[in-house]
Length: 165
Image (cartoon, rainbow, N blue to C red):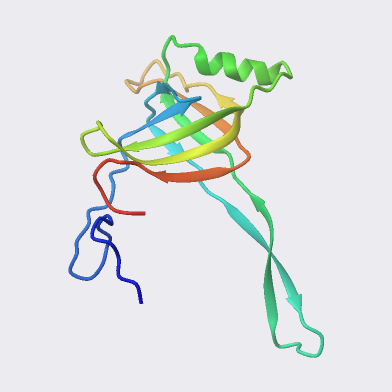
């Protein structure tokens, strides 16, 4: 039996309390350039489909075999500004010239200064856009929505403080 090294990051174990990360400090990087801070990110996920298989002669046992892997689109919600970077990227896809880029959703520590976790979207491109609802009677921020299709998801643990992966 091997013992964990003393240099290993703390992990949640009985008697060892580790605070979970906060969900409110994050940003989007596209090709390692910060594209802004967003109000919401959803859809980070992966699904491994299953194939049900019955062995001959054993009708009571159903085996589950992994099949195709799919990645749902990641939805970004952000405040409307004059910046045209994301709009221009979307328009290349509209014109039939999809520009695939590596994008990262970076989770920051509670102070917003150090990276603690990162999800990399491989070969991402804008799939959908929804404009901000406009209402003259409201005092809400104008929030746009952009959905990114991608071909894979990777997770990296940052060097900032926090729980281990």
